Length: 102
Image 1 (tube, rainbow, N blue to C red):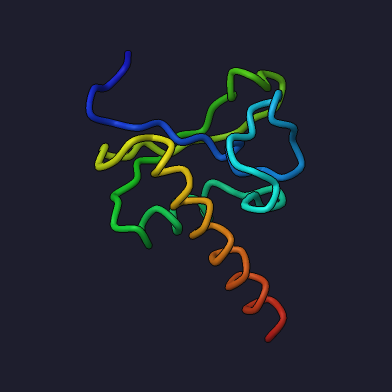
Image 2 (cartoon, rainbow, N blue to C red):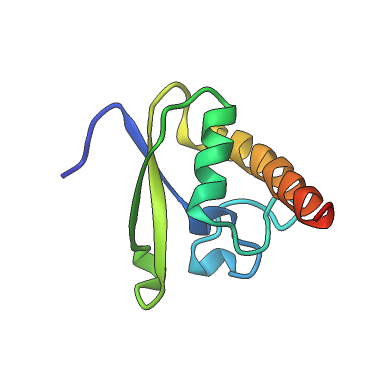
């Protein structure tokens, strides 16, 4: 059932390894390689949202397990996706830096 006032943001929207026709919603320049639900949650929190996460099958790729976050709507979905994409690039970079320091 659709919740009004909430946005559903799938991890696949930001995945650089899939095509636009398979569900990617951002340009390759803003996409990241194989983002995780944890990274999307971290990016959402960084933008001031309180995300509720859920695993599931993204409709355009129903053979691959994915996940999404549900966010309270503050702006349009496209604006929120662009901001999350930018933040997700930063989160991925921080993750690489912390792995490199080990």
